[in-house]
Image (cartoon, rainbow, N blue to C red; front, side, top):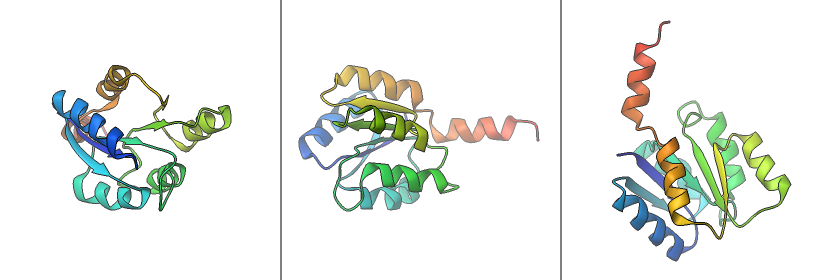
Length: 134
């Protein structure tokens, strides 16, 4: 079971994602706007973030920018889930450090597979780091 932070301002989408991910065994944390994300990361230490680009307070690109310069949060994989489909948006998010990019409307089971592929629980990551030679 992984801890997944969902950041999206659409309550219906948050509910759908929360239901789908929880049914798959994940612990789900939700944020309604980009301003909440950084605090929730420090509080809950998610294993993965599903991040919308267009949110109030702070957009997803700025959230991603700040995550990737934060020593504690930089290694958390981020899946951008957004309606923005221009090449510049996709490439820009990947250059900022997004692990994946999915355009709305999307197939919920496809997102679930992408989460499964990227969400490595924090304990496993810590165990792997401890085993690496220094």
